[in-house]
Length: 71
Image (tube, rainbow, N blue to C red; front, side):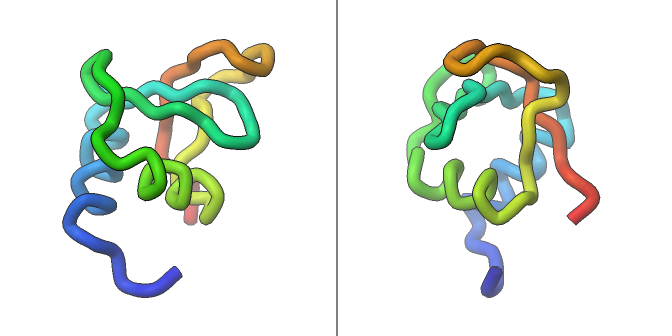
């Protein structure tokens, strides 16, 4: 992944602060503090890049807290 944008870094920081949740799906919906994240494309790119994942396994379409990956 190329250099991260400020928005990507902000989402990673919010994830580290346990403020993010996402749906378990191929194209996850991401919320911060219970509100939809303003840039779903950026959020999904972080998930697809393996930087953010669900903290617990959930059924497809259900929400789970997000966490940073080892990457």
